[in-house]
Image 1 (spheres, rainbow, N blue to C red):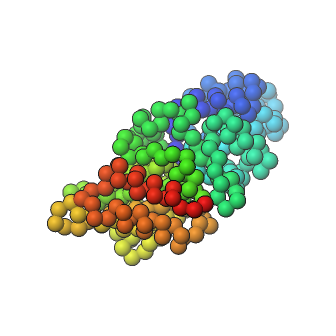
Image 2: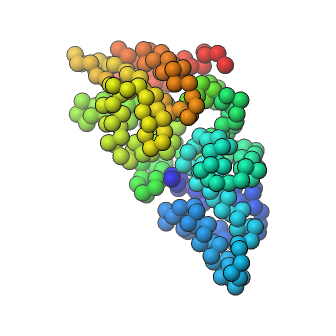
Image 3: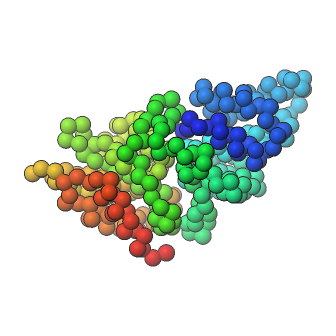
Length: 292
């Protein structure tokens, strides 16, 4: 799970849209628990426990508390996956489909989520450009273990048209691993702060695994996330270095198509001394020329 330090404001916004004033009484409690890095479901259970105690009732939680669990589960999934489908919400957050549809529709109208299309189904992305999230690219993000990770110079912002093309081709995220001659492979650039990216930043051994295993396999599965890998050869000195261009994909993405797209991008990057932020972005923009 990924929790961003502006989560208190996010929770206030979403609560206002979905539940109204009936549960505002519990927000201070929820926010204080979020700041302690507790999971959304644990927080919801504590809220319900406190409410039932106040009501001196042992009956099932009232509907309002069930709604609270749904909202918190929705927030947890959105902050963690960043790009997801309605099916993901139902399966992983365990929210009824009808409720999930209402939540996503309201979040899109509020600008909290962006809506895209992949294989005739909607794909949602947590919008870092929303007003409550405007500091996203400049501040540290707090991950599950509470570690502060700097995104400066790593998170590359792309336009909506390019993102539509990527998602339309089955690509959720693209990231670049650069081989540092002194430090070894390191995560250099990415276009979305996904759950996998957080994992790579926290545990560098996964970056090393990608770098090593990519020599024998162009596809890997890391903690349930499927990635396609293409080699980028740079030559900062006399020695050639192998770097990796990687794409996070959907479970049903066309792996051959994604591999071909990555190969074309890799060719435009290979041969350089180093791949700069500008080089990376310009290479990605070639995808905009692809047909729908």
